[in-house]
Image (cartoon, rainbow, N blue to C red; front, side):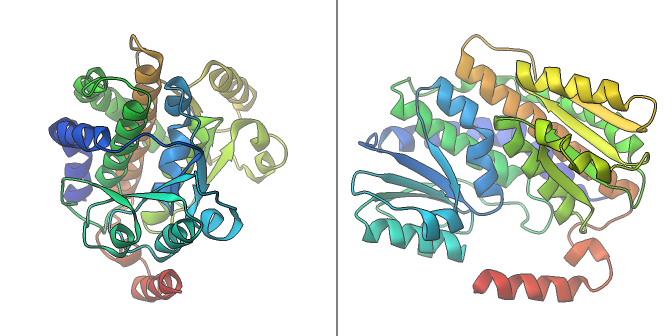
Length: 339
C-alpha cells in the first residue's frame, strides 16, 4: 500500500546524487552574501533550515532561520541582508510576500524552487532552480524535503568556500543510511496504537527535524502528533501522555542524546512505546557529520510515517488520507493558503 510514498523515499538515494552536481554548480554561481542571511519558508521549507542549523554552524554560516510569516511581518530588513526563500511550487503566498517585502527594503532575495516561472522566482533577484520534478504532491512530502535540504547545504558549502562535491561522502552513504533507518523505524511503528498520540522530541537542530516528522503524521490523514523541545517536554507537555502513546526522542547531539535517554529511562515500564533515535555513523568533517545526522533522523521519521499509514490502511494520495470530510478539509486549507 502507498507505493508512491515508498517510491519517493527510496528515490532519495539516487536522485540526490544525480542532481548534486547541478545544485553545486548553481550555488557556486551565486555570490556570497555581504551581511545577515535570513532563510525560511512555510511548512517543510521552514523546518529544513532549522534542522540544518548545526550544518550551517559547522560551516561558519550563521544563517537566521525564520518562517515566511515571521519574515514578512516581524523582520526589519537592512539593505545588506540576504533572504533565501524556498518553495517547491514557487507559489506559496506568504513566501512570495516575504520576498517582495525583502526586496522593498533593498535586501537581496534568493529563491529555491522547482518552477523558474513562479511568482517566487519572479520576485527574487536570483533563483536556484531545483532540477527535478516531484513524483507526487499528495503524499506526505519526503523527496521534496531532502532536495531542499541539499540545496541549502550546497549554498552554505559554497558561501563557506568549500569545493563543489564536498558533500559527496554524505550522499554516497545514503543507501546505507536508508537501510538502517528502515530497520530503526520498525519498532517505532509496531508500537504505535491507533488513535494514540505521538510526541517527537528534539533539541537544537533536532527540533526542526521533530517538527518535520510531526508534520508528516499530520499530512497522513490528520494523525495526532506533537513536536517539542526535549527539555521543555518535561515542563508540562508530559502530563498529556497516556500509557499507549508513543515518544520518539531524537539524539543527534550529545546533550540531546543524554536527555533523551534520561526521559526514556524515566518512562520505562509505564509508557509502552518510547524510542531513542541515534544519529548515523560520524563522518570525517563536522559539517558532513551534521548533515548525515539530519538525513538519518529524517529517513527514520519518513519510514515511521509510511509504516503507520500502511498499518491503518490510509490511502495517502486521497484528501485527508481517505478519512471523513477529506475534500472539505482540503478546500478549507486551499482557502487559507490563498489568503
